[in-house]
Length: 118
Image (cartoon, rainbow, N blue to C red; front, side, top):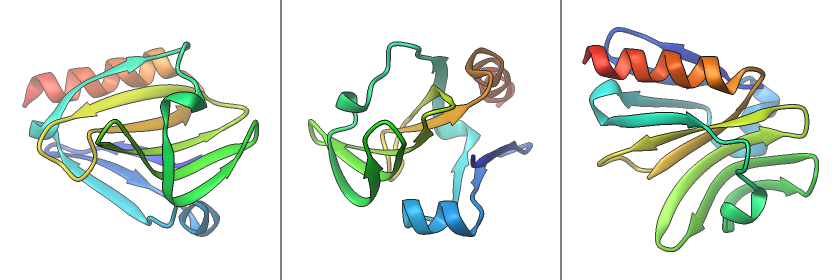
């Protein structure tokens, strides 16, 4: 599972070698000023992701990489044992980042608190 880091000015998603190979993306850095908010979205499904370009998708196992739906680009990394947190972005490469985490409610609260401080 990718590691989420919140610095004073950035939201950083770190991925290990295998995660990088699956997602075709190594590290994602987003200024906190571009983070509009984060939510824990238990109702989020893989059907919401759209067309995978590039990345990996094995239904029921892993969704990793860039997905395009309705003109929006989104980055996702979710596995079957995780629950999604959706991070909405403004003026960035992706419209949102969807990460599978163990505790999406706590993760969303941390992201929102960090974004509010900016």
